[in-house]
Image 1 (cartoon, rainbow, N blue to C red):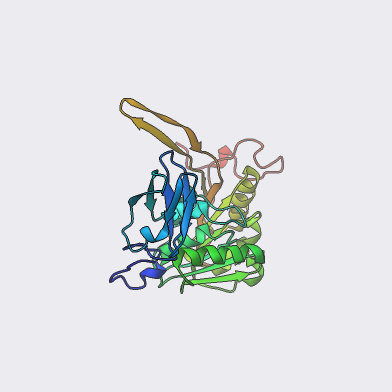
Image 2: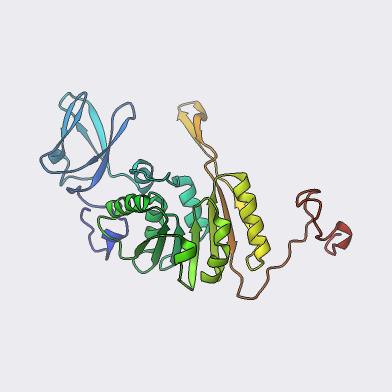
Length: 307
């Protein structure tokens, strides 16, 4: 993984620094912006339509250099960032994209030393970010129902970190059946029916712990949020999505890009109340018909917080 210098456990923190070494992945970009992921091996040649590039010309050299193919085309050689790695990794299940991964790590406040549970592991994109965030003193326990997806995740995560991460445990099976952890700081779910896990997660989370779900559709979003509210021992859920748009900046030609990363999923977070403590009831009245004709919640005349 290159020269990790004086940083303890750097090989397991996702820190890639120093000279390029055999076994590392690099990204080669041509003048048209086309990118190729290449695993460096001594004696190997990366073949392009414009001639080959010898791996040995890059190994033991610095990161962020240019190199010419035998046909004279200049390529930019860089170590991939974690975001680059996650979108290019081999996939079993779809990956959580970097824009959502960044929101999860930040908005769920995943901190060094935290104890985090995730399900499902998918292809391991979020797992790499969680492991980097908790560090070697933390713990990430990943659940994945499908053994084939779990194997893909294992290969991707160990490929990124250069070996088995000491803070990671991967379990094949259903979180509802297998989760026995307590005093968990954060739980992140990426699954079709996260509302089925609310009771189990409530039993695992420490008071103040964050419950985060990644759901793709409005129906999933609604059912999960209402299940949290009905449970009563979580704070009022917060739901949002993030949209990312590049900008074209060239001289005076400054305009929005033609492409953007639009809807991928909704994110929902809520905090665990202390056991037996009910969250304050939501006081604002829902829209007429929001809960059906049998809704018996407070009417406007029952409210005491209006001016």
